[in-house]
Image (cartoon, rainbow over the protein chains, first blue to last red):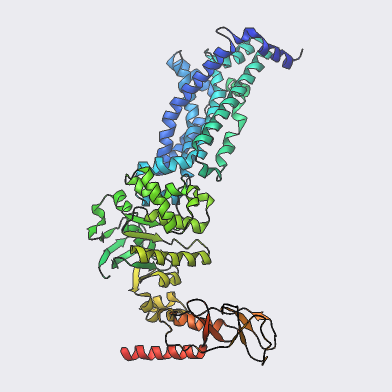
Length: 247
Length: 362
């Protein structure tokens, strides 16, 4: 038996699909952590991104800070937060929020500033107030590019949320870390495949949402937003976890 | 007519560096007329326009619209009371054509259904098919987008229309069409229109009055287009108006005094020519001109020049003669039937006598 058939056998084993350590429970935990991280990160990044995109103020600072945040090692940050703030759910969530804010911020800002300045000027000249310009013109027209940033961030979170299992918490990352400790490679590979499959399913859902909310008047235009979103490099979960481990 | 709608009083706009964009501008814009701001780039014409609806705030001086200082009204409210058309249509890509047109009524709180109904009517006013209403701006041609831009500006029926080079990004044929359309609309609507362009031809075609701006934001001349072409105030205006101003000026005098001579016209494929050395006008069976048969070229049809219609100007009369292969300008009646021919030399004689009459009047 090679590793692939063993992995397949592991995945097919009904024992692994039930109980507190079963795949459905781990999957749900994984989604919950990811959702929590994304909601907090979006609550910070989206308003700031809208403000910077709309006013053009603070762009240089935001780019510098976002770049610096991106350079932080995931696992190192996670352990630091756990050491400083103690155990529990929130320290690792905050650590992941710090890593998720930059792509969300960049995507929001890029979306708003991608809107044709003539359109914004015309909206103002029609007599729209600043908030009407932002939410009535800039957001709907920047949505396609913004979705690119959002989807990239979501994929990244789903991949990196695996590391919370190191603390140890739940989620699909459990299979990676437990497999590593037990030298159970089929379990590790199965975990990786599950995370990748989850990332793809979520991305498909987001693609469907995008089709629903983005005006058809924009679809003939810029496809730049999609390019970043289809970059799956962030969704190589095992690689992300191992990278974090060596950092 | 001479009642002022918009007034600039010593208005200056100064950006941080050096030269003012607009320098001590004082002028009064007549109600219900088209006033054109024209000048080279950097002359402050667009800045002046945008100060009327406070898209740019003046450094000093006051602007009044309908007797009311524009700074006394909140900017957004002021802008909703004026239509605005810009060079790139500035339509919102995410909204359908109808919803784009309905923008200002919606901002004013008109219910969606009413605003859409009004928008559909406006499509017709600006000469667009109702079926275009459901499309998105990116599915329209440049000329169609500009028409939608005009419809959007008219939607709330504002007394003032500000137009910032609205036709300069479309091709010359469409531009000509849009200019005629605007004049037609203006006959019905009688808005106070301020129109910015860098094209002196467009300015003289559209303007009841033309304001020529010089670089540095100075008003060089403010007069009727006829006067600007005939009597430029200074060297700058003369050079800006350009080389053909004498010819263009002819567009302001009707050619009533030009004699129309009878002409023998033959129908296409008619009897053989008695004298093959003459030019012969060929018409269709409705007596409409088709072209000319040249000397020695037998029955080969040469396309004719421009046509001279009743009520046309001296410019048209002269052009008809100059553009005709035979040297005879074809005059037609209101139904497009051949009425006769005009001769270039006689048009020039009329022009000269008109000049002498003007001189005598001075």
